[in-house]
Structures are given as structure tokens and as C-alpha cells.
Length: 488
Ligand code: NG1
Image (cartoon, rainbow, N blue to C red; front, side, top):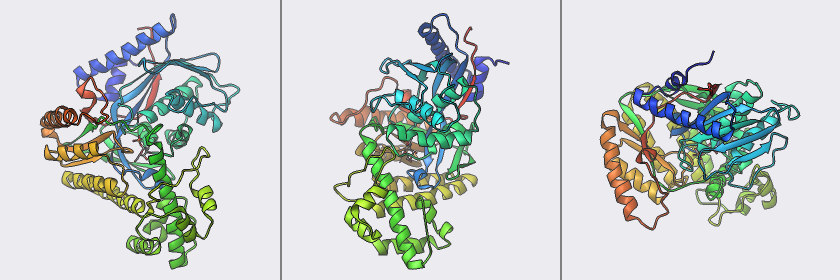
């Protein structure tokens, strides 16, 4: 039974009649683009995958510690039909992305670095690699793709594209897979574009529920729903500084992943020497007080006494570990694509990264309790502490994000912090629900019409619609595919 489009969209977006009209118009426009791109043919499926805003738990996922994001009503949509051969033919509604055509054949060879088609290829490659679809029998699809998630802004536009691509490829091959398994598989798919990210974005895009945030634990993937208090709204503000992880931010992001890997090896060695325990951790979370049966404070003390708090050179790390620098580089500094991360000129800041990750993990647990108690002030305070730790220990902020956070606190946000990888992108602001309109107006005047106009030399991105750079997040349901009535 095919459901009417507006009924389906109301279920997904759970919005006012006026907003629903806007969503319907957007899907109708994509259907029209499909018909003009593939004359005489009708689509058979629609897929939608949402972006997300992370409320707290930054740079914890790849360390095995939890995060707390929610899916938002900004998403990637595919309108498509399976093909009789294995060709994948994708047209983007944005003319800045060229049409891409490739075969679903294993291995899928990537386009040049930075090409948007690589996110689609990443999903197809990973599914074929997992053996979920036999490459010899794989069917392709033809699709038009539209998106409303601001790019390179820490709201997971790339992961939403990966998730939507996977769902389209699976639907084209009439293959059903459990969403938890798919989320775990797709977390690995981003290595295809050269970043070492964790699994938060794919998991929330697939597993989110309307009106709720998700606490996500990893290895294995587990989720817990968090009810959002009605008196608190989450407003996203874009700093207008791009942070593209497939390009300039790649080294900075991957460096932190490697620093955490080095911290894991050093902490394990130190704890082992002091406690006599035999430990084989895969990531920092394997060294938590709870897992080791020790007080967290005891571990932190052992760590700071053993390898100190200043940045370490590769050869010092090698000495601590009793290995050669080459061996450490090979074992711990090699990225998933086989390349080796070069030593940062200011050394590896293992202690600061360790302190951020461990304290941030604790803040996520505290946030779960604060949400459960409906304590908005406690949630907001934890967000502010997370911001300080991201800025000082993890160093993923930038002058524009700092300006944005400080302006938003001056204009009524109870809590404010950068969201996502950082280095630019967006902040998430906890604002009393009855003050949201006023907050947006004063942020517009102070940041977008004030700071941005004054700091003319900064590389701000251009925007045409204010609603795309500052908006209230509505927690939507996770990704899905449904049959299309393309003949309407
Ligand atoms: P964004 O903001 O989407 O680039 C990245 C990682 C997450 C997580 C955050 C930091 C990917 C696809 N996403 O998010 O897994 O590590 O940074 O908390 O790599």
C-alpha cells in the first residue's frame, strides 16, 4: 500500500501545516527534476537521511565513549528507481555538483579527493565489501538527490549522504538489513574519504526517534532515548567558517584521532607498570576506571605522573613504550588509508586530548541524569563545560566560534558550544523555549549583521537565507526508504 506523500512527510517532520507545505513542495520539486533528468520514467522509491546536532560528547565516539546527538529536520533526499544493470547514475539538484555515473563493481575506485560522488561510492563499496550484496548480481539505481543540511558545518551532511546512498543501494537490491548493523558498517565507510571518524553520525541518522535525543554507546553500538524538556530549545548558529573534513580539516581531525591512539598505548603501559594488570586496550574507553576496576582519579594520577602533561615528541613516546620511533609510527600513526600521519611541529598533545575525552565522557553521563531530572540549567552548564574543554584541551575551536559562543551567552543562551568536529561550522545553543524568537533576532543583529560585517577579512561563507544559518532544531525520526508515487 502506497502512502500519500504529505502523510508520510507529516509522520517524519511532525510539523505545522505551513511547514508541511514547504516540505511537500521540496519533494515535488525533486520529483519534477527526476522526470526531467530521466524522461518518460517514474521513480519507485524515496529515501531520506537526516543530519544531526550533537548536544554533548564531542570527539568521544572514536574513543569508544558515548555521545548525545539528535537528528534534525535538515536532511538528504534521494528520489530513485533501480536499474536493470549495475550502473549508479546520480544527479544532484545543486548545479555545483556534477552528475556522476559509476558501476557497482568491487572494489569501487574513488573519484578525486573532495569529490561529492565519493560519499555515494563509500556506501556502495562498504556494502559490497561486507558481502551483503553479491557484486556479480548487484543492481544499480538512478537518482536525483537534494539536501538541506548546511555543508562543512558540523551537522553531518556527508554522513547523511552516505546513509541515504546505502539505503538506496539496499532498496534497489531488495535487501533488508538491521539498522544497528548498517550503522556500524557505515561508520567504517568514511575511511573511504580519508577521515578516521567515529560512528555517531551514521548511528543517529539511522536510529533517531522523533522528539528525542539519543545517548549512543559504541563497541557494540547501543542507544538510549533521551526525552528533551519542553521548556528548552536547541538553536543552531552557523559561524559561516567552513570546516571541510575531506579537505583542510582532515589533518587536524586525524591528528587528534592519532593522539588518542598514542594516549591509549601510553596509559595502558603506565597503568600496567603500576598496577601489574595485563591490559590490551583497543581505545581509550577500554581504560576507564570502570573497566579496569580502579578509581578514575587513580588512573589520571598514574597517567600524569608517568608521561607528564606537556606535548611529547615521537621519540619520547617511543622511549616510554620501549619501541623504536619507526615501530610506533607504523603501529599507531598509520591511517586507515595506509598513509602515515606526520608528527605535528608542536608535538603530540596526548595529555590534553586524554583529559578532554575522559572528562567529556563523564559529562555525557551527567547530561543523561540532568535530562532525566528535567534540569535544563544542569544540561546547559555541562554544555558550557564541554565548550571550555573542546577549546582548551582538544583545541577544536576558532575565533569565530568563540565570538559566536560568547555573543550567544550574552543574548540569552543558557549553554552554548561548538557542535561536531569543530574548527568552524556551527554552535548549538540551549535557549529557554519562550525566548527563542528574541534570541534569534538578537543573534542576527549581533553576529550576522554585526561581527560578520565588521570582521571583513575573515573567510565567511556567503548565505542567501538566514533560516539556513540560524534555526531551531526539531528532533526528527531516523532515515528510511518508502515507495514513491512518482506518477502524481
Ligand atoms: P562532523 O561534525 O560530522 O564532521 C565528526 C565525526 C564524528 C565525531 C565528531 C566529533 C565523521 C563522519 N564524523 O563529525 O564521528 O567524531 O566529528 O565529535 O567522521
